[in-house]
Length: 332
Image 1: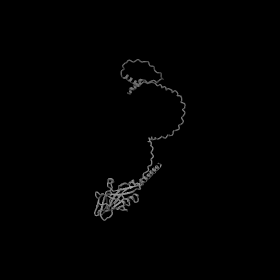
Image 2: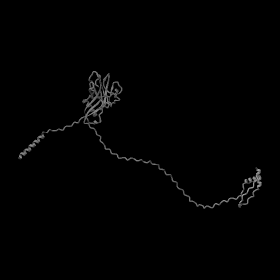
Image 3: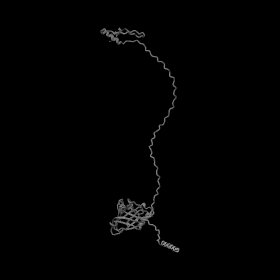
Image 4: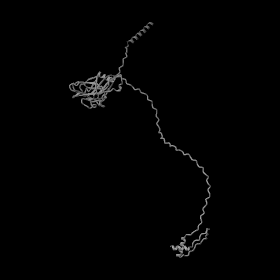
């Protein structure tokens, strides 16, 4: 019995080891990041033409040879901050919307795209001040411009490598020059230019479509800001009034000691001087005239009250009235 139990245990252990060895091995594989797609609108585009001295930045772009004139287009894109740094450009494709294609003998003319080597401005660019270009020079054939084939594309490894070098800063990004590669045959394309209404996604202006991965976007560090304390509302400060400057106080003089007031004496009462009394002369004159000219009717005399003459100093005797009466009659 003991041997059978031992044998069963060994058999179970062998089966476990066999099953463990038959399980498939799982190897760790690096995960691939999904590429990010970005579509860029041009920041400027224009064209120049032989002998034309005015800017063409507000009309559709033209490139090629036509009626003895050469047309060259210029276009520039700018990378957005969202692409960060350290990205790998997976693919890059330039898309141009063809409004009109004028082809004569050569049905599939070849055009050339080259990076520009200096800065330029669309509002200033004319034939006499066009910038130079350098390699790498990209080649493109677009064929006819029909309703079903309006978008003309430049893509491939050369285009992707050029965009990568722009992004890395290996060469300066001044945009592209687009021109006909050979002047043996005439051909001209007219492409939609960039305006506010023509921009992607609603419009048909030129586009640079990029797929990239592995970009690092710097996240700004947020510095905590101290919460400001509540500032009390200032109260109205009263306007100070001017304080008068005190004048010098005069030194008081010594007050004189009052002298003794004299006792008033009795003022003597003045005694009027006694003078003789005179009777008015008119009374005597009237009485005398009446005595001489008019008869005097006897009238009853009123009773005469006794009169006591005041005691006075002796007076000089009055002149006689009869003499005075005669004198007055003569004067009349």
